[in-house]
Image (cartoon, rainbow, N blue to C red):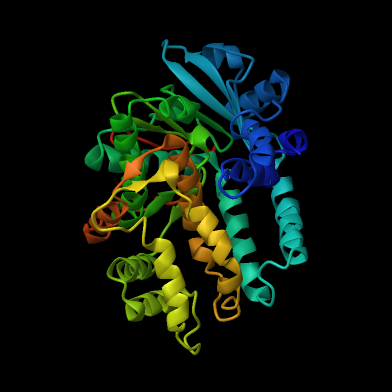
Length: 405
């Protein structure tokens, strides 16, 4: 399966990447071979990549770079990354999209939707499944626009520089960027597997910071880095976190932020009425549907009791929360017809589940409750989502030194 997905790339490979970090939910015999998909798809020949670069930047490769390595150091689901040196000597990472990726998105999303129907997922929720498929398709189409990715990368770079100096986001080289080529300054750190061997205090600090930037992005910038693939993070023993790959970014509307904040307040306060209001506002509970019964809230409360403990850190290495969720699925399944799948939360939930897997690997102890409380209490930062039209006639990004023109 890993070998096949590695060749197919695209949306199907992304599902394999997500499966690879679910070691708690899926057997290790299944997830271990899929781990290679996080960074090592079957690469395209350099001749294909060179042609893509020259078409996009309208110049020969040798006139664009002093040197460029023909072997990629990362090959992912929609593109591969080559180490290069610019004409002025700067070491950069050149991300190049595979040719014809647009053609695969609709076909793969349709196939995945059919598979979900066949498995009985979202049974009786045709409209909800359509909304989920539309959300997924839109996210994938956004990932294919590297000019949009570059703008998101700079916005999050500015946000974290202001609020989290321990976050390192590579800068963009705008003159070497188009819709299908993205060139960033090269910054490297240790992988998640290496960071799992750091001293316990450093692991705890990194775990706290990973969760902090997740919730601060949502409530501070109204944005979310939506791909928790471990290859999109790197770490240093000093406690710094490097973020990569900003193709999958969720922009939240103010009403969505209000609903998510209300949901989380309900969890923290163990307030069923507030939770019900949040579920209605986010679109998970129809306005005319009855409120969930006490049994439902008791089930959810039991699941959240350990991570949201008011005085004890949550030991991710010893967590069996995933097993508790699975054990309670038969009881929770009886409520599925009462709820609607909220498409706008698909990416946030993907990040929550992926982060859980990453934090378990990091073996961090975290005061989850404090992090969430601080995030929902903070005022939003002055971050404005970028316009999709900030490009020149060749699809290149228009930037000045301080931001976007």
